Length: 94
Image (tube, rainbow, N blue to C red; front, side):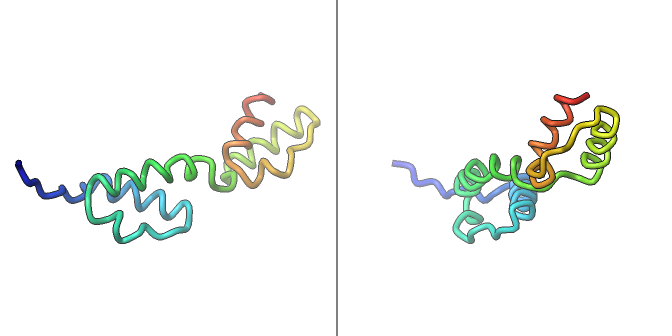
């Protein structure tokens, strides 16, 4: 049969993986950097975590605080620790 060499990761794939790793504050395993398929698997496993991981941005907090003053509502503490939760709170209180 044909023996094929695995393809190396693309530059775009490496950049995306590094952005995810920075956001999660974790290294990319060396084995995941060897082939395109291995890096794709690592990205798939960690992409969702990076989307929900991370504190609310300063712009989100400023806008939420403005809404909270107008609506006279408190912002739940957990919203400050999760950008996704803060986004949902803002959408619900516009």
